[in-house]
Image (cartoon, rainbow over all chains, first blue to last red; front, side):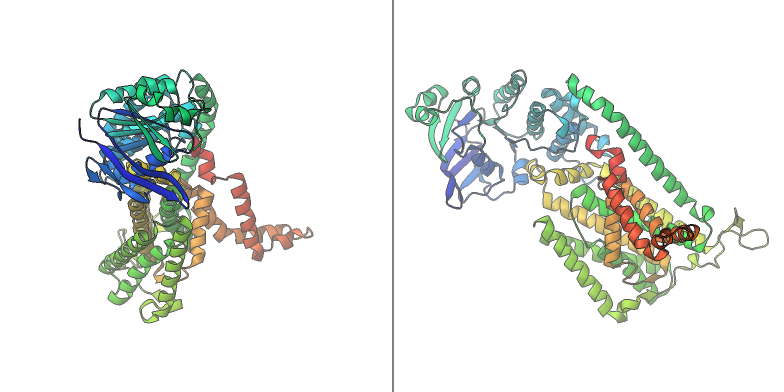
Length: 257
Length: 366
């Protein structure tokens, strides 16, 4: 088996008396798409925030390619190849769709300290940004401010930003939530494309069981902040504990946490 | 997709027209400033024109902070003062000359950089409100220092000195056949005109530098930080480093504007550079013009300066012409000009919530 690209060891975070993520040790490998499931408040989004650096753990460590990155800032982790799309749309609302994506491309490729050259003169950056807009079917909306997009398109832009970061590790937090039936396949196909690239690691929080079945190479289950199951899809779905957790909770219902 | 096109189409036109209006007004202001010595030939007008030039740079560099990056600072006049005092002290100590201007200006700029880096690194991590308080404290300390070290700074009285010889009224830039000062369109080509064009051109260069910066990739990053700091960090931008850099850039430009101002005024004191009333003026100029637009600074500065210099005169005329009517002359009494200035501000903010340029250009839907 290939070496893990990202790994958490005894990762724990407490908010006051509440332990949101409790001693999660888990390794993710390139070429593998892991779906993270669990009921509302299981700690899935918090687990993502710990890996991408928005939250600092109370205990435990995060390793990328064997290197401890627990203390790195979110921007340093982004530079190190950890990319995340957010569950609640998290864009630059007054900037145009193109500018949103260009920012991510620019962060990845750098433009140097050239203060006096107009942004539009950096053709390569703009070309790359357009490619990502094309991939997410947002080309026609390029000049609209992000805030003017309908919800489904904002979700697509969220994914476009992640693509533009060109990470090794892709973290999708319910990428298709709130998307219409004809929009979701665009994003799912994109995720499938990424999965085919064996150098990339994909982590996906998802509730819709059909999506989980279609994409997952592996499923891990979080419950009350703890890792309760980990394995191939059929095996995990069949586990009694999983059935117990999901009992009475329709698997395709959205999550607010 | 078609619904979006339909929704955006009717809205695009007023935005474009608004932008055209704004750019036309700014161009007109620029031309008026470029030919100010020929258009307005009295001493007071040249003073107003020079102040407008310097304050456009000062307000525009403040817009880089507050409008583009979302940094609230009250130390902008401190940096302005550093540049002015640097030049003033050098001109006083070394006598008039370009060496003194350059050396003093450079000393002011270096001090501004050091202070901006220190304030930035130490406090741009904290919440915006605390940062604003830190800058307020720093600016207060600088004012106290300026008044306490009176041997050096002239205290409350400030420093009077001579500008480089080129700017002396007796200097002949161009002479006619008899060796007298040449007059072009009734304006003597003497040192005063050289001084004005020194101010105008320096400010033009600084303003264009600012325009280039906000249109560069850095400008977009600054806007991104203002819009969503957390996401900017998440896609790989070191927000604190960017904030500190822009704070330093704005400080350097403010200091350079201060040096130009000091050379023009031939006097530097707390009231012309460091005072909080100037800080409030700059803030109002940016808000009235339109935060985050750069060109808004031009409009805001011109409106405020004209109101500050000429509203009183206008009211005098109005009070006299309405002297037969009851009550009105009392209301229009020139001493009440500040009241009317206040009313004007409230109306402007009410009708142009995003500032004049900001509202006309609808930055939100560009």
